[in-house]
Length: 528
Ligand code: PMP
Image (cartoon, rainbow, N blue to C red):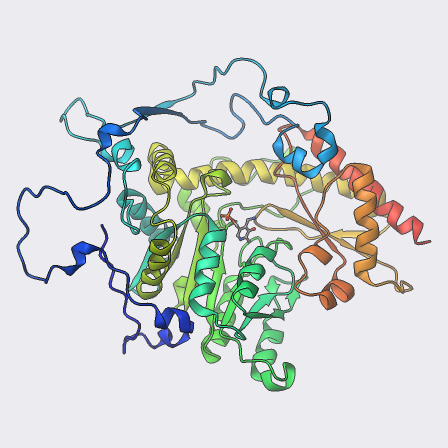
């Protein structure tokens, strides 16, 4: 069991003053082993009759064979009809049974098998090859367990971001959603203000509001690289006048790379300025970075004649030329909390991610895990770990990032090409945000200046048209706007993504066609 003794005050780390009252009030959670006074020698061969851990001999799972793909879409691609379609279009399941929806044919995709066994005995040494051992995956763990995977997260952060301070650590969470929910619960008391990008990933807002926190919008500059830094500075320098009666913000929540929904990515220069402003105004920065490894070069109309910049790219060049460095790198105070997830790199269903931050903050997050799930799923951790080890650790993980970047860059190119040839584009009805990372291509609707309707009304009209035309997009202007005022006055954007399409161009082209049709109908029914 991990022994965790969080400190609530530390003269060397004054940022702990930002903790919410419930965190300060929480008694440190300890296991029975923590009660032994320090300095006592343990018995060399103890017998445990203490913990409620069943002997692993009673676990029915003996081994699991993990078949991995060497490339995305190798061997079998996703079929168009699956469960998500059923959720989105409830009418589509008429007459279908679960059996109808199962992939047809026999599964023969024996690509590369790793056996996840209880213990793996290597031929040479006869020793246990721990990384793939199921025995630990099935057993209780400490909340800060999974040593091998933890080493991977440390190496990844160290290699890509080189944190400015040494006193940082990582902990596992059940996906970024869980991580963010826990992070905000450390800092938000009822009435506290959290600054949030004006269009954002709404589930994080739900977490903040559930804690009684109040969000306040930070303006984005779509022409530039995300947060409008001058406006952020002005807002905080003039807070009392800008936000009368509101508590001064404690936290900034930002999706720094491939922002959801706009696809914008902050430059290094922007990050430095934003950090300095947060330092001046004493804000914690929550950096949510699920799209860090999905890089999209600018659309190039001649892409068919050219190689993608990723072809033959070394991992080091991918890091140096394409990946963005975390706020941790410039964080001399320990005010940055970075959230990562395996959802986009491996699969959302693994429900696994990690947080990197100052060790005090990591200790508190670990305490929250002890209050809830106790530790992340060992089976998931083992599948994630085995996949990464099989790929070859950090280098292999990043190579997979290159593969996904290649796939998505190709999709982006054909999607953009389709729009460039579309009626709505040619008539100037839309512009596209050329996202440099992530999964989202945001379409900006260029309404004429004669328009008298609220943008949210137009979004509602478009929603009906896209529904009828059989294309699901997110009217980001309403769904992902932080509040109604933003939706009404600035919400002329829709979020689209090509990541769910099957592996042929036709579906992406058809999607672009249906979006084009819906937008033209919207303009025409408004007499434009
Ligand atoms: N943050 C952002 C910005 C996201 O877009 C998402 C998922 N779409 C999440 C967090 C949640 O990710 P996870 O699947 O790891 O919970």
